[in-house]
Length: 129
Image 1 (cartoon, rainbow, N blue to C red):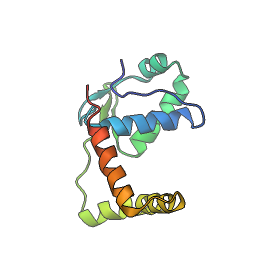
Image 2: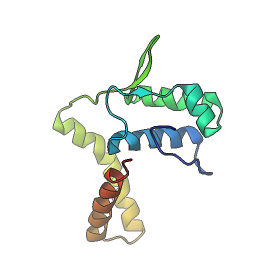
Image 3: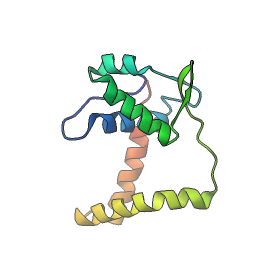
């Protein structure tokens, strides 16, 4: 069984769904820094997808520094580097802007948005085994 829950859905590239599922597992504490990441073949067999698709997801996670590759040993969940607060905030700014635009488009008020964020955070952290 994979350490990150995923159910492949039509409409979004499979590798992106894998990337999102892994990031979600890290955020929820299902995967911790230093944990061995499953082999490409293992994930491929478990999800019944092409190994090249899984390799693309692993490459993306490595490029984004969520995974580290240790030649001869495998992939491991990376420690998230401590960065300056202003850099962290700047990295989130475009994501927050997109969220606010979508919320406005759908008629979601600020209070509703805060409640939704709070509930989703609780749901994310409540999904532990």
